[in-house]
Image (cartoon, rainbow, N blue to C red):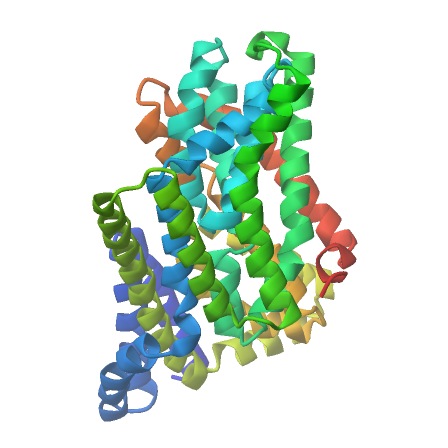
Length: 428
């Protein structure tokens, strides 16, 4: 049996293992060892098991991950999301649907520190959902807005997904962050437009809140300042070459910690933030170790080259290859965590995409947006279940109904990005 055939069979086995709820990291590592043994030999496979964890965990390039995670956790522990939502509410609260607009705007701003979709959705839902319910917002609009708004955390830099994509594809982290800036802002703008259209055609979904004076709006905008300062420091420092990504992450985490202490965070809260960050980091690094072992197997099986040859013989046009890959992402995104999916699929599909002539930085943005859609699509939209954990009385069907317009908005943004690659590459 040839190496590519062994590779394809074992990849199918891995997907089956994931389907029966085996941890993704174990599935990748197990298939990697079995496949390498079948193609090469058992002794080299055992050597990979021995060295890969150390090589991955001691890789300095991965050190920004816990720092960026810590930034978001600290902001959440210090209840900075409350102040941020109040600031956004002072601007939009008097409009019909203004609370939903404030929630999406706060999610977009919070993601400038968080970098995690789940953390953004969890933090903002605890603050914004009670306020929207108090004003009589429809459950579908309130929960759908927060579930979709949380996905902005995966795109607006600093983003854990963009960071991991850059590291596993050997692209510049700074280039990926800058490339994600305009698509991330477009996502925020399109979500706001979606809310405006929904409440225009169905006014019963929401009602206006209390009006604020110009003075209140100006004073309220102070809530945006800490987030904007940290965001500009990180992105500006990386883009100008003043900081490496690791240095920027450490500086951002330190400044966020200082701000959090001024906002009333206690030492107990700090220890809780560190503990939560460690738990999240361990989960991600466990998947990285599994992906590293799986990568050795992919290398010797030559699956990517085999698929490239097959598609070349079929004569698929470049966009045919791209749409096939994106369709795979959408299907897997319905049942798999976004970070795990990137680690699992990108090493396989990137050679196909590059052979079709697409820029790897641009493809990274397209891939992350497509993965982002998986966070709010059934049957396993992770952000939907995060919102469900807060809004226990709202049926899942109502939340999925609420996110559907935002999924359509994401599809439109994706189409624009495919049609106009300069939206991602113009600043790089």
